[in-house]
Amino acid sequence: MVTQQQRTKYKLTKRAVRRFAEHFKGEIILPEDGLYSSARRVWNHAINQYPLLIARCTDPRDVMRALEFARDNELLVAVRAGGHSFAGHGVCEGGMVVDLSPMKKATIYPALKLIRIEPGVLGNELDCMTQAFKLVVPLGSCPSTGVVGYALGGGASSITPRFGYACDNIAQLELITAEGRKMVTRPGEHPDLFWAMRGAGSNFGIVTALEFHLNPLEQVLSGHLKYPIRQAAKVLAFIKDYAPGIPDDLFLLFAVLPHPGDRMLNVSVVWPGDPQRGEKVLTPLRKFLRPFEDTIEVRPYLDEQRSGSDSPGDGDYSTARRAGHLDSLAKESIDLIVDHAAKAPTEASGITMIYWHGSWCSEPRDDAFGFRRSGYHYWIHSYWQRAKDAREARLWVERLFSALAPFSSGAVYVNDLQDEGEERIRAAYGDKYERLQQIKRKYDPNNFFRVNQNIPPALS
Ligand SMILES: Cc1cc2nc3c(=O)[nH]c(=O)nc-3n(C[C@H](O)[C@H](O)[C@H](O)COP(=O)(O)OP(=O)(O)OC[C@H]3O[C@@H](n4cnc5c(N)ncnc54)[C@H](O)[C@@H]3O)c2cc1C
Image (tube, rainbow, N blue to C red):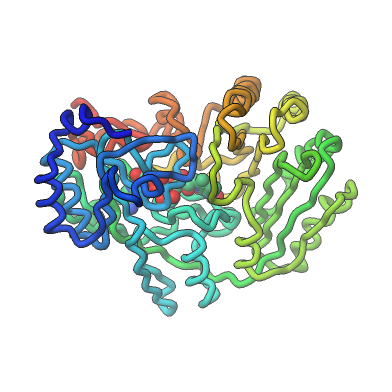
């Protein structure tokens, strides 16, 4: 609930809001409005915060006006697009939400292999548009994630081994800075900002348009191999030896996931190359042990994207999540995973791992993205719908996270973080963190954009 105390703290009067509305084309949603309770919701329902107002922007001018209003009234600002941050950074308590979801214009230039999108465009919308021309941007498989929010943190996709992270495909960004300045950055233009935006973007401004380079892709060889959970140790032991030898283009993910009546070990593969070669590469994996389901086949890329992720879709779900990275898959880690999987409090508690490899995931690139690591990226996740299940679900995630910590490298992917404090944000950027602090000092010295995985400005 928004209290009178909060309104007073932020000195927000009805008159001030009325004057703001006169120059704002979009929708302004206040706590007394019918839309408020759904508009303040973010994907992770464990986050339950009450902003003073939500400004749904229709264009960059609206964004500028909203920021001006926030500055004049000393409001804390959260920036929301798809609302899928696990930490719930698309909303804040007692401040203003700058909601970009209505900004959905997109223009594709197939001959130039380029697309320009506004920040309200979602994953599924972008995939549909690019696939109409047999082109692609590396996106996750969740249809409702905001593309810009995803790409500003890096953007990990099943076609990353082939085409890089989403941030590797950014050609240009248009943004509004904390002081309301409109800027364009691309290679050679504000190079420090272009460097920083690709990996730590939410810290430096609000992106009002983004251009991606597009890659050709029409179909993939992909699917799932599903095993009963009792065979998990055997499958993971096989993967430990198989993964280091796979060709660069192969995406390999495995997960302990819900399955009616019990849970299962799911292995997912995506091969964007020649299907015949892919069949050969996958033969040992498909043959070493008979799964109860094998769905691997050649399919349109769009069908693969629609085949789902390890997270439930939009709905009334709360989640806890902890993520990390293993350089290799030791027997001890396999034993821990199998053991904890057996003790999970709900069916919807599991662990997912991606084996990252190849040049995009290991060779240094000139950007702020801090998770260019080969090895095993993992996230431990638990979902619940009833408040009484929250404690056990959270505890189980923390227990497995602590148990894996001694085997982990300490690296973490920023888009996986909940609100976990400065140390973990430093871990997400490694040796890039201090340069990011200097750039933050130049473009946002007062840390106006701080409802994010925050990089505070350098002091000097
Ligand atoms: C179900 C699910 C599946 C996911 N799958 C993947 C995946 O496969 N790969 C992957 O890499 N990540 C994945 N993610 C993580 C997701 O990409 C990040 O949480 C991303 O930041 C979400 O962006 P959003 O716009 O939806 O979220 P929001 O909560 O609206 O925003 C997230 C952050 O980005 C900032 N932001 C958003 N738009 C802008 C903008 N225009 N300008 C400046 N800052 C902005 C916000 O301020 C906030 O800090 C997944 C998340 C969920 C919930």
